[in-house]
Amino acid sequence: MLKRRLIPVLNILDGSIVRSEDFKVHQNIGNVINQASRYNEWEVDELIYLDIGRKGTYAAGRSDHKVNTYVEIDKIIEQISKVCFMPLAFGGGIKTLRDVDLRIRHGADKVIINTEAFHNPSLITEIADKYGSQAVIISIDYRMIDSKPRVFTRFASEDTGMSLYDWVKRCEDLGAGEIFINAIDRDGKANGYDLETIQNTCDLTKIPTICCGGAGVLEDFVEVFEETNVSAVAAGNIFHFTERAYPRAKKLLKEENINVR
Image 1 (spheres, helix red, strand yellow):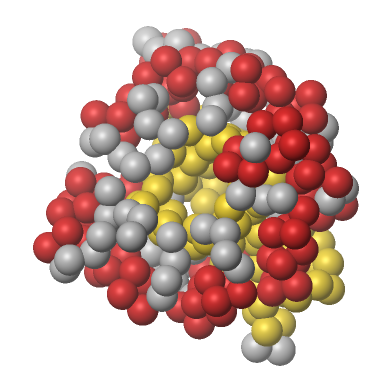
Image 2 (cartoon, helix red, strand yellow):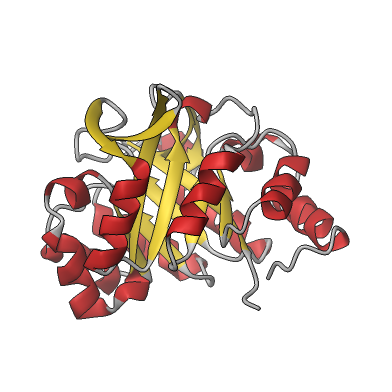
């Protein structure tokens, strides 16, 4: 049986790591490269970076922090990869195969695509053909509408009208290697994972599913692993604000006999 994964998610906004809530409220956490170093010390299973900036620019930041800052995405990925010795997935701002090439060339092992995948589905197949399905993660943000999960794009602002489940199956058919589902209504709320939708997605597809949105306490990780067949559980805020949350979470999962890496 394949071991399951616990994955930190780091959101980049204008060159800095931020805490996210409701996809709208963002609190600056710190330097992009330093965060990667911290997680490397904890030997995390995998690391996900999501560039959630709308401008496509990266501020140089304050000079009195005595840390290096970078204003180009290729330099950011390159520097992260130098201190990140676990699988690295990078998403955000990817619109073409050339964008994918840049991220892979500078150190990403996988790319994550959201809005562009929906509006240009052939890109999924192009990436899979060039780099293999294992390099393509499709991120799907969803909101519950009339008790059913519906896909939203463009930073959760555009209602596509499509069912999460229909889009998951389409992505699998197009060559995606993994699905990353993110519950918009639970972003930053620390109210637990959407277990029903997660399990329904796992039942629907043969490719690995990563779930995100809702982690508030370490026991939330145990619950989602015990109650669903999800391949990986991702979280962001809890790892920023709870002391040594990642190593403590892994210890708890192993104590509960969850087959994690």
